[in-house]
Image (cartoon, rainbow, N blue to C red; front, side, top):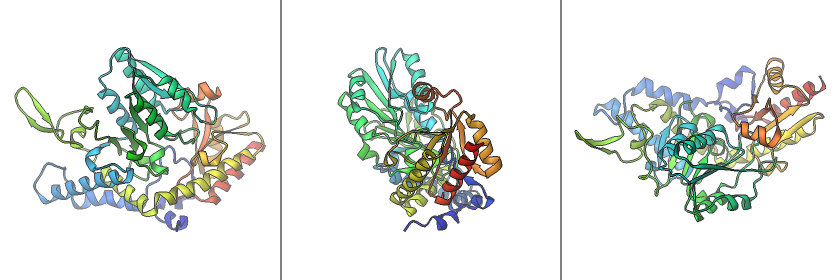
Length: 400
């Protein structure tokens, strides 16, 4: 049974009296994850995959176990399919820089993407003389699959799509997009930054070739994240960096890369952060992702419906609460969103986000919002009372 009061005990920062609703930017971290990181520094602080002494052996065991926990969490077939990254952005850039693109080939992405899954492809397209085609959604973030079928063709090398918009909270049918892409031999990379923390993820079911995600949005440490690489692409994908740890053998005039995932993890990795990410996955598994989804849906429904009921407040994203997670962007009359966010913090002890949310194409193409929006985003430790507190505060602000 989901018990939010019990979960909240694991987050000492919540005792400070702030209603934290900026989870789409970065989640809070439970004590179990903090203690697991501290365990590394206190008990077996050493480098991994290097030494034969007991500290290094223990650190290596914990580091490898973290790979296993993360792989299990996203449904990957084995730990070798998950390379540890610093964040989603690094994972997407690894994929982009690995592609041996040719002039005339095409990359397809969408208008609702975070900049990390947008400008990355613009840059590689310019470098290689490729084109980038952008699929538009409606204002709720809904896509017509026919639009993907029109754009994705035999010249398409890769389709890059998010599972959940970090602005609209809408859930994208990635599995259907992947099926269209694969009909034309195109690869699929999923931005899972918002999807993996909130929705059960099964990479084999979705059929994506790559999935990038961030630990800091799913109860893990900053500077942690992962990149899933499918079995078919595992040895076709080039590391972003090579050096210590990525090598199986080196001669005067040649080298041989190590087996995955180590070939993608150059130099001394962020050992404590990776171990912390593994513990974050274990925490979410103990709670149960079905329970996380259910609680998130309850909060999202009340948040979106409550904001829609307030006069002079405009809410963006899906009308159907089943089509979104707990990310709700809105504006209050003609007030600057930054002023609204500052007032919520200073006058009501409520933390939200404001601005463009690293999604300028969406802001420009769909809504013409030069200043962006206010964004409230929930997670498993938030309560209905906290949502009501936000709604009351927004209503006060709207009345002036």
